Length: 63
Figure 1: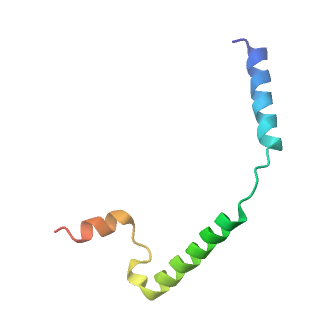
Figure 2: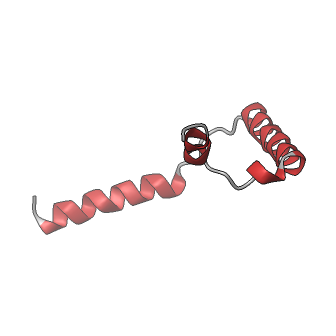
Protein backbone atom coordinates (compact mmCIF):
# COMPACT_ATOMS: atom_id res chain seq x y z
CA UNK A 1 0.00 0.00 0.00
CA UNK A 2 1.37 3.40 -0.94
CA UNK A 3 1.97 6.17 1.57
CA UNK A 4 -0.96 8.23 0.25
CA UNK A 5 -3.45 5.40 0.67
CA UNK A 6 -2.05 4.56 4.09
CA UNK A 7 -2.32 8.18 5.27
CA UNK A 8 -5.87 8.43 3.95
CA UNK A 9 -6.82 5.28 5.81
CA UNK A 10 -5.32 6.58 9.07
CA UNK A 11 -7.08 9.91 8.59
CA UNK A 12 -10.40 8.12 8.07
CA UNK A 13 -9.95 6.02 11.21
CA UNK A 14 -8.90 9.07 13.26
CA UNK A 15 -11.93 11.02 12.06
CA UNK A 16 -14.27 8.14 12.95
CA UNK A 17 -12.79 7.94 16.45
CA UNK A 18 -12.97 11.70 16.93
CA UNK A 19 -16.66 11.98 16.11
CA UNK A 20 -17.83 8.66 17.56
CA UNK A 21 -20.13 9.11 20.54
CA UNK A 22 -21.53 5.86 21.94
CA UNK A 23 -24.75 5.75 23.93
CA UNK A 24 -24.10 5.86 27.65
CA UNK A 25 -25.68 3.16 29.80
CA UNK A 26 -26.30 5.09 33.01
CA UNK A 27 -27.71 2.06 34.84
CA UNK A 28 -24.47 0.11 34.29
CA UNK A 29 -22.44 3.15 35.35
CA UNK A 30 -24.46 3.46 38.54
CA UNK A 31 -23.94 -0.23 39.35
CA UNK A 32 -20.21 0.10 38.76
CA UNK A 33 -19.89 3.16 40.99
CA UNK A 34 -22.01 1.58 43.72
CA UNK A 35 -19.78 -1.49 43.64
CA UNK A 36 -16.72 0.75 44.05
CA UNK A 37 -18.26 2.30 47.17
CA UNK A 38 -18.86 -1.17 48.63
CA UNK A 39 -15.23 -2.09 47.95
CA UNK A 40 -14.05 1.05 49.76
CA UNK A 41 -16.22 0.18 52.76
CA UNK A 42 -14.75 -3.32 52.83
CA UNK A 43 -11.23 -1.85 52.69
CA UNK A 44 -12.00 0.25 55.76
CA UNK A 45 -13.41 -2.78 57.57
CA UNK A 46 -10.39 -5.01 56.78
CA UNK A 47 -7.40 -2.69 56.30
CA UNK A 48 -4.87 -5.55 56.42
CA UNK A 49 -6.27 -6.83 53.09
CA UNK A 50 -6.87 -3.44 51.45
CA UNK A 51 -3.63 -3.38 49.45
CA UNK A 52 -3.38 -7.10 48.80
CA UNK A 53 -3.51 -8.51 45.30
CA UNK A 54 -5.17 -11.75 44.22
CA UNK A 55 -1.77 -13.44 43.99
CA UNK A 56 -1.09 -12.70 47.65
CA UNK A 57 -4.38 -14.33 48.64
CA UNK A 58 -3.56 -17.47 46.67
CA UNK A 59 -0.11 -17.90 48.20
CA UNK A 60 -1.17 -17.11 51.78
CA UNK A 61 -2.84 -20.49 52.32
CA UNK A 62 0.06 -22.44 50.86
CA UNK A 63 3.05 -22.89 52.94
